[in-house]
Image 1 (cartoon, rainbow, N blue to C red):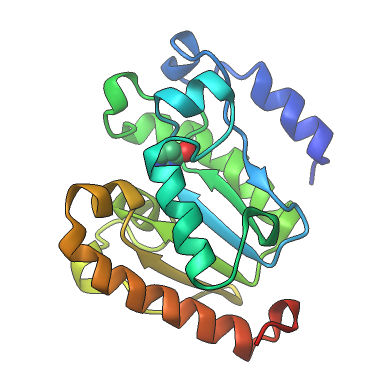
Image 2: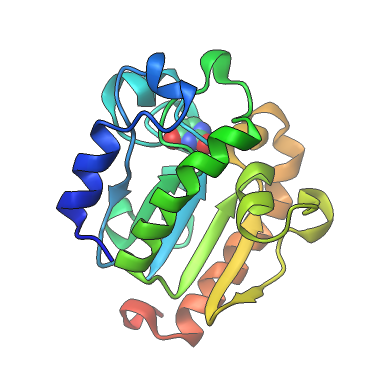
Length: 189
Ligand code: URA
């Protein structure tokens, strides 16, 4: 088990995969380290790479709205990604890049020990729930992973590309809200 400081120092000088050669900043995470709810996306985009903060571009604005729709802010959750450095041209992170980076996400997970983990999109769901995860068929279903309540919904970028998916994403958010109430997280009602 490492401390946050050790983890951050490691990430900032990490060269475990090729993405380290093209990054501007390592994007470690954002939000509340004591949160009970963790959101995991895919990987940093251009704005995130420039600012060193996850979900600050268009997808991030939508994620903030999604959180707000169930009365959450970034201060109530912790947000990270499967890979911490930007894949060039925003391509999907390669399996070897994910394999190199996921141990760092696992460290974050154990430091936070969330009660709820939300996978944003296919890449996160395949990495954290099941390698053959089908986002259209398996989103909105709770999985128990060592006592943590894990669910996947559409990635905000997918919702921007195809707004017809927003109805299902909204249903998923309601499931998350219900679970928060059930688990009495933040004594939320
Ligand atoms: N998309 C992601 O998956 N993560 C970010 O941080 C930004 C966009």
